[in-house]
Length: 266
Image 1 (cartoon, rainbow, N blue to C red):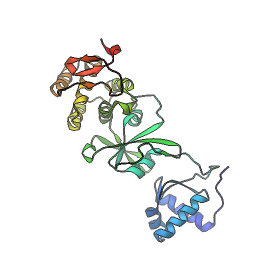
Image 2: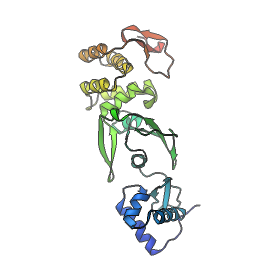
Image 3: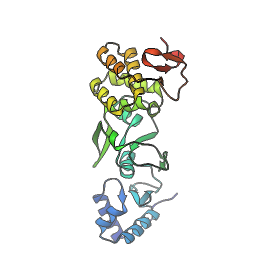
Image 4: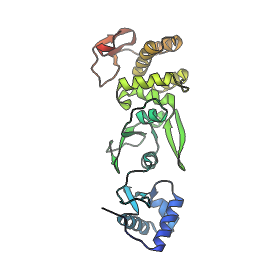
């Protein structure tokens, strides 16, 4: 078993100072300020502590502490949201990860969805056994977000309405349109239901397929929302879209310009 090895009293005091002065992750720049060393010496010391099992490297220049009770330095991430915020900011937690947070699904998703403005070479990194799916977005689409606390760290997550909008914009972020539909129904029945806000967000996103999917689902599952349904119709664009780009759809609902699977036909 790869267990942490002993270090001296001074190193223990320095690690304690790092843990007190950081929030879940430790970067070389943060450690340099806290320890009062040169950046080069700090980098070497962090690497040495990692080799002894007191820290665990998650990315070049970024570490997480290994819990004292851990029998191995090969630990799982204690809070993946904090690590994501550190590595990919500006970013926010979205898709099915946000849907889980807001209680729109009881399904357990093993991958954490992160929307970030930074382009990534690896869109599906695995960090200490935790899978991430990185979706690149623009600064203009950083709205409808809520700041939440994870321990002592602030993390951005899409608010309930923005979460649903992102799922309608890209159904794959909810595992496909079928689970997205279930999440949407939970949203409609929840205290977070705010269709006017949802419409405002959809207009800002400016994806015609969103209005087609939203109007179709409202007409099917909440037909009493006539005003909202008509508002979606007013935003329809030319051309036909699919209810889910990754789903075989062979029936065209002409009033919504939307292709759906034949089993969805009324």
